Image (cartoon, rainbow, N blue to C red):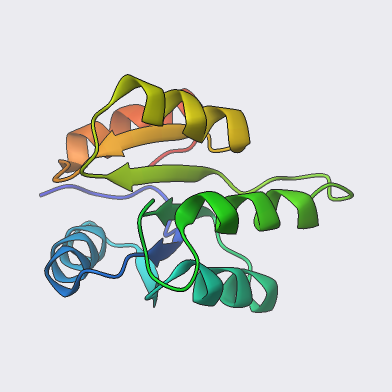
Length: 130
């Protein structure tokens, strides 16, 4: 069984119920906490109310997409010492999508579905420990 070194607080921005269940289950199974935002607007509102260690951001959501939500979050962090890692989580595996994600301030990119091992590799790149 996977053993975490430190419990992290995740924010998941995802509109698809099936994807929500899978991602939430994976994150909780390895010992982390996770809150759910059903669109980008909710993600921004939740980010403004609570501190998160990492944000998993779907790109295509109703009301506000992940690109706009990330831009708003990054803009609000301009005067802060620490920025919250944001990982794009999407079914679109196109190279131009990845470039767009990185350009607007996301820290990395994962295709759905993803494994805990893939998430762990990204965390290592970001200097975080699962």
